[in-house]
Length: 177
Image 1 (cartoon, rainbow, N blue to C red):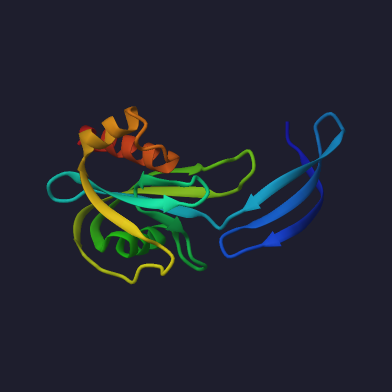
Image 2 (cartoon, rainbow, N blue to C red):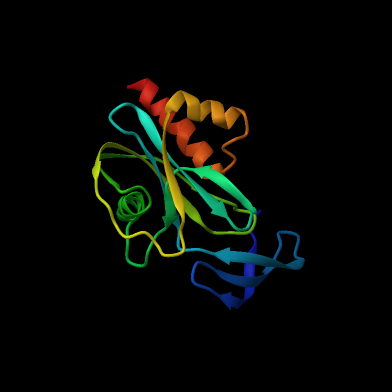
């Protein structure tokens, strides 16, 4: 079932991702090209405050042309381990840090064309920790009861995959404790 790379060329190098085209040999001996988005990885955080609300953000996402409800997230910086990135992103996007961290899942975001791995964490025992936000991000912060967030998923109001996965996994983890 595996494919063997016989040639690879990078056709774009960007700030967030690179794009390469690999020529591969298929299991049946034929060759084809695979377009691959190369990404250093990303983190996402389900942050739960003292009242049990999760911290959601709203932001405009240019590729979709829409304002989306999401959990805080972002790319892992060079040299960071995933949990360090999660801590940084939480502070940058929400102004909170967390004393308690649990890893919820690691998954490929779009394995049909990207190697991006997403690391999702549950963060609790929040405290103020304001970091400078990226100058190209415009975010609204909204504490939402967990039940309301899961209902927003059911109604299609939360349509972002990492947020859906993170919220549902956190909800299961919290119910189990």
